[in-house]
Length: 341
Image (tube, rainbow, N blue to C red; front, side, top):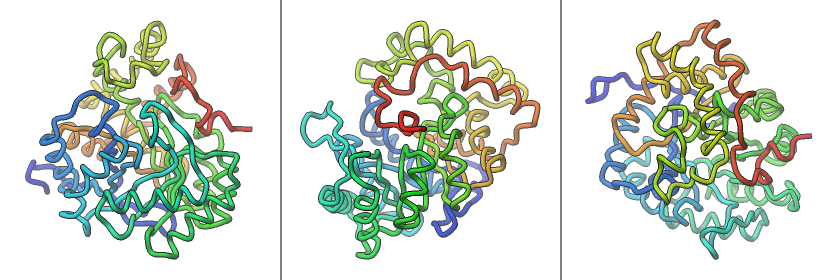
C-alpha cells in the first residue's frame, strides 16, 4: 500500500530473459519538451509517486530535450537505482538543428551515443537500450552487432528496438536476443498488430506500447490541438489531432465514454486497460508507458491495471482504430508501418 492509499501494481517479466518490472511503466518524454511547459517540482514528485506505486520501468531517450531529459532524471535515478529499470534510446540525432531529425544506426554513432547517455544519466550501466528508429540503409548485423558489444562491455544489460516490423525484429533477434519492442499501440493505433506483435510473442520479446493514451487525445484533455494546446506543443502538427480529423476522431470516443461511465472510471483508464489486456489476447508481456507530469494522473494510470474489460466491452472498442482519420505523424517514413510488406 502506498502513502496515497493505493495498492502497488503487479510485476511482469519483460521478455523471456528480461527484467522484472511493474506491469505499467513511465514515459518521461513530456517532462522536457513536446507537451508544453513543465513544473519540474511537480514532475519530480510524480516520479517519486511512480516508484512508490510500483511503476519501475522508467523510459527516456537521448533526443528528449536534446539530452536534458536524461540529465533531469539523473538525481532520481541515483536515489532509486536499485528500485527501477532504466531504459533509454539512441538513433534520432538532433545535435545540429533541434528541429531536424537525422536517423543514425552506424556503429560509430552507437558507441558515441551510449557514452553520452551514461554520462548524462550518471550510471555505469543502462538496463534497457533501444534503437529508437531504424535506418534501413545500415544492415541490422552491423547496428545490432554494435549494440551487442555494449552488452559484452557491461555498458548495457538488455537490448530493445522501436518501430520495427515483425521481419525486422526476427532479423535483429538472430544477431542478439532482443528483450523489448517499443512502438505506438493504443485503441487508436494498431499498426503493430499487422506483424510486430505476433513476432514478439513468437520470440519471447516483451512489448512496451508508447502513447497508449493517444498522446492525451483518448483522455479528452483536448479536442483540437491547434485550438486547445500551447504553441510549443508538438501535437499541433500531428494530422489526427487537428481540424476535420480531430472532429471525426472525437466522435469515435463514444464507446470509450460509455464503458468508462459503466465502470465509474476515466476514459484514460479504459484506454490503458485495453492495452494491458492485449497481453492476454496475444500471449506476451505488455508494459505500456503512459507519461504524465502530475502525481494524481500517475496514480490514476496505475489504478487502470486493476480494471478488467468484458468481452462485450472489448468488442465495442474493436472497430475504432480502423476508423481513425489522419496519420500518427506528418512523416511516417521512419515508422514500422511504412516498411510493412
